[in-house]
Amino acid sequence: MVEVPDALSTLFSARVETDGDRYIVEIPKSEVSHGAISPGETYRVGLLSQVDASSSATAQPQTPTQDTDPERADTGVPQPPVDEGEIRNVTIESLGDQGDGIAKVERGYVVIVPDGEPGDSPTVEIETVQENVAFASVVDNDGRTV
Image 1 (cartoon, rainbow, N blue to C red):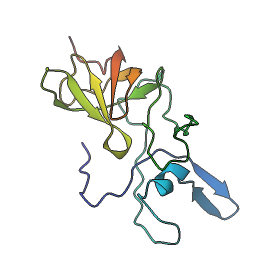
Image 2 (image 1 turned 60 degrees about the vertical axis):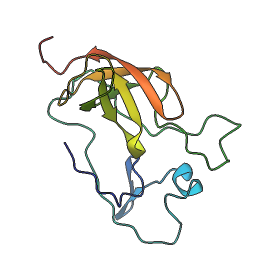
Image 3 (image 1 turned 45 degrees about the horizontal axis):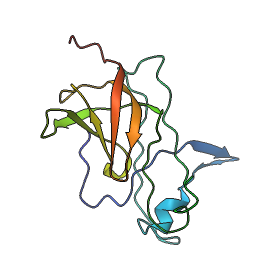
Image 4 (image 1 turned 120 degrees about the vertical axis):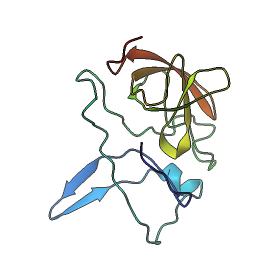
């Protein structure tokens, strides 16, 4: 598990693009609009590969989500970083009060995974998305026996 410092300003998924002799990582507009970062400032950037050795070959890559709700797109309110029907690889970090697995994705957004155990890395399908939590079901286990 990756240690996340308290000073973390933002966390999002993005593709590294080539532009001549340099590389570009685009920052979603929502990260600036809700105040996580400011244009013109300098930030320390860390990159984590989204593919690890335990990933399933059939898992779909994570893609940055866009603000698709027209009522909230320009209000500065961050949108959930997942969409219903999206397939994700997650790592269960802890157990919730009801015994379900708790995984966190971009910006610390919580994904609840039934029957998940800390350390599990299942591929899940996001079923229900709420403002501060999503509920998912396992579509492919990480090889652990159930």
